[in-house]
Image (tube, rainbow, N blue to C red; front, top):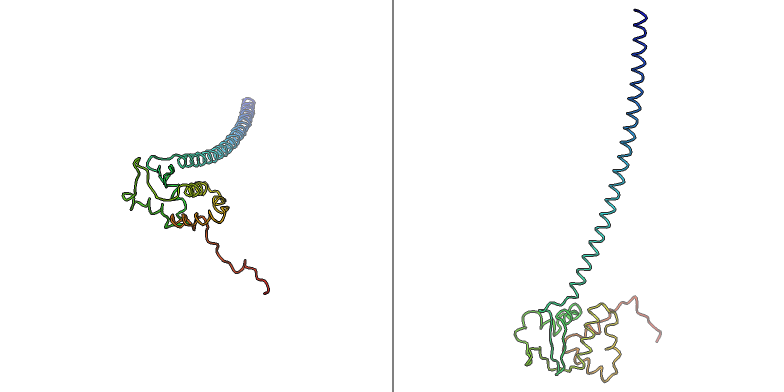
Length: 198
């Protein structure tokens, strides 16, 4: 009986040792699985964050594209038909008022401010009639269009006019209140000035 008891204790001890070893192995497997899952979670979080950044970038590009397209679309109420000295033009309010920051008191700024729209003189076809030189206005309108597009040389054609044409242009620019937009004042900076002995 004592031998049976010793045998029982030995078998129980061996079984317990085997169970503990199996339990330790399972515990190690679960720890490895948990680490793998944690790595997968971090990798997926990184991919999601990267995807969000890409999505935000795409969203910003799309919003910029929409804004650009909306800027190109001319609403019917923004279209302006002009009859200047018998010459017909079609443009937009935005083009005619683009230089307001340089010429805040321009003819077109006043015209489209909302205070004078009922007073505009119109021809028989409903175009706004202005009794000025159409051929000179054509150059002014081209300047405004190029200025609107951000062209730094928008006024080049006007600046290159011969003296006799420049005199007529200056009269028209003064009338439309756009001289300061075509010939912006150059700020004087004493640091940039050079002096010569005299």
